[in-house]
Image 1 (cartoon, rainbow, N blue to C red):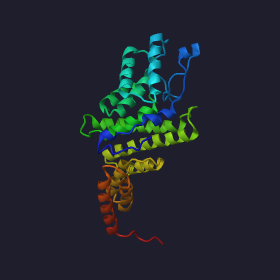
Image 2: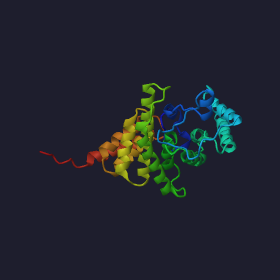
Image 3: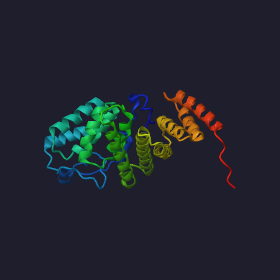
Image 4: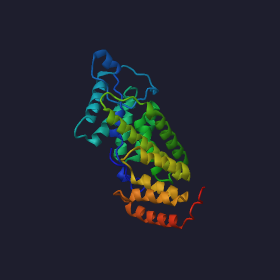
Length: 290
């Protein structure tokens, strides 16, 4: 997965979570596929405890063909994101009772993430999570993006509470996700580490927005330790947390980690790191313990 970039600074630098999330996908067979011996349906992050809210009716030939066309798009070596979005939107509109809707809505949520269309990402995620509340590929990026949108947005405190709920639920589900047959142990471990880091990153920024600096720093330390593919924003916010907690030596280290990465935060982190070092040097020495 590409390194997460400074969403607080520029939403246009969003990284794509969906590719790594797809490694968690379970291969399940549709009702019609089981009867006719067709290929298994496309992957979706369905946790063993997850259930769709609608029954699975029989699939008509047109629906099956449209669904296969969507799946084929995801396998293309040169995907057309706009075409995939339109095809997914059309499918959801044309087949309101389809038992493929959970997979389509999940993928569409991540497509809008890639297109940086946050409003549509969030609205589509509501449908995806209604159909499958345990969809980690939706829970993680939505919980991650909510605290990074405009804090003056309407109902923002409630949105932060939703993001916290999503990330905590994802962290409950991740340890028990079964490894898909098509993924190697290394791929699966890397994907889980990336998703875990992303979830803790989301939680860390939620708590930062709420002024809960100790909780924020605890979760951002988890985020930066879960994977080597780190986001400079996580280190930047961690530095701000530790500054607020007057742990200036630790704050300096966090800023230095941010400054070592190429990003729009680099100069700010260098400046903040130098300031934190100066504050640490002026702090009284801790009393010696016998």
